[in-house]
Length: 283
Length: 283
Image (cartoon, rainbow over all chains, first blue to last red):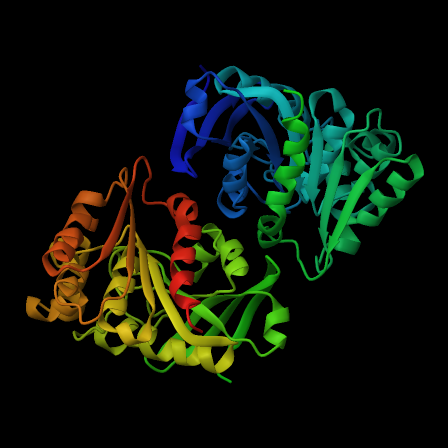
C-alpha cells in the first residue's frame, strides 16, 4: 500500500488522519487529510459517502482540517471528509514567489506549459488518482460531493460541472468564479495553460455553467464584506451564466462576512447537510 | 480607551475580534481575542456573561480562537468568550529556550524571582486587570466562568478555586493538575517562585482542592490517549484531592482522545453548556 500515515487523532468519535503518498499523476510526494466518522460503523463493513474539500491559495490540507470545525457535522451525518493539498509539492516542483502561482496555487488544472506541465496536474489528481486511492484504502464509497473555498471553490465548480457522473452535489464558499477575467486567474492560466485563451474555458466556472452537461445541485455562499469579491471572485459572473443557461444555482450572500475560515466555519454545517441530502439519498 | 483593535471578523452572526493593549500589571503590550454573540443583542444594551479561556504552553490567544470551534455554541448560548495570551510578551520580557518556561509559558502566576518578577504576573492580569478592562469596554457582564487547556487548565483551576466569588464555574481540558510534582511545573515554579516549595502550594490545583474555600462546580475532561497524562498532567492527583476533601469534582475520561485541539473541539460544546447552566441561572 502506497500510503504513509503521518497523524491519527480521535475527533468527534471519529478519526482525523493525515497521510503521505507518492502521486503518479503529479510525480511527487503528496499529503492529504481525511476524517472518518466513528469506528463502530467501519467495523460493520459500512462505507461512508465523502465530501472532497478543495482549499484555497496558500493552503495545505491542514487549514480546513484545523479551522473549519467540519468534523462535528460530518460525524453526525456519517460523511467522510477528504482534504487534499492545493498543488504538487517538493524541491523538484517548480515554484514562484507570487502566492497565486506555483506551490500552494495549483488551480486544480492540468498545466500544458513548461516548466509547470511536468507536475501541475491537480485536475487529474482530484478527478481520478485521489478518489481511486481513497476508495481502495479507506471505508469510503464512490458516492462523492465536492466542495471548496476560494481557489478551491473554483476547483470544485470546474471539476463538478465537468464530471457530473462522479459527484452528487457541489458546494462552494467565495469561489474564484470567472478566473479568465480576474488577476489571480489570468496570471495562473497564462503560466499554466499559455496565452491562447480558448484553452482556458474548460477551467472557468462561469463559462462552464453556460454549457454544463448535467444539472448537479450547486450551492454558493459568498460573504458581502469579502475584500476579494469584486476584483477576484466575481460571483455576479456566475449568476449571469446560470441565468443565461437556466442552471438552478443556489446563490447565498451573507452580510458582514469576509473571506476567512471564520466565514467557512459559520456555514460548513449547512453545506454538509446540503451534500447529505444527495449523498444519503437512495443508497 | 487603552485598546487597539487588530481584527474583527463576523462569525456565527457574532464578532470574533482581536485587540492589543498596554498592560499595567505585566508592563508590556498584550493581545487578547474576544467573541461576542450577535450584534442585535448588544444594541439592546444587553451584557453577555463570559467564559474566560486560558490556553496552554506555546499558545497565544489565536489557537483557541481558530481551532476549538467554540463560537457556534457560544453564539447559540449567548455567551462571550474572552481569550488572553499565555504570558507577557515582547523584546524587554525575559524568555527561555525551553517551551515550558518564559514567553508562552506564564503559568498564570505572579513571579517573585528575578528576572521574571518584573513582567510575569499573569495571575493578577487574569484575576483583576483583564476582566476590568473587558467589562469597561465591551457588552460583557461580571458573570464569569473560567476554562482552559493543559497549562491553561492549571490556570483555570488555580484562579477559580482561589477566587470563588469571581466565577460561577470552572471547566478544564487535560489540566496540569499537580504542577509541584511534574517536570514542567517544577522547572517553571523553581524559576518563577524560587526553591521554597511552600510558596508553590497556592498555584497547585491538587493542593488547593484539598482546602478550597468555595464549592464552585468543576468539570474536568481528560483524554486517555494523552501522551502527557502520567508524567505531566496527573489527573489522579486531582481526583485524590477531591476525594480527600469531599469536593464535588466531575472527572470525565475519554477513551482514545489525545492532548490536541481536536479533543477540545469534540467536547467544547459540552463545556460551554456546563458553564451556561451556572452563568445563565438567576440573572
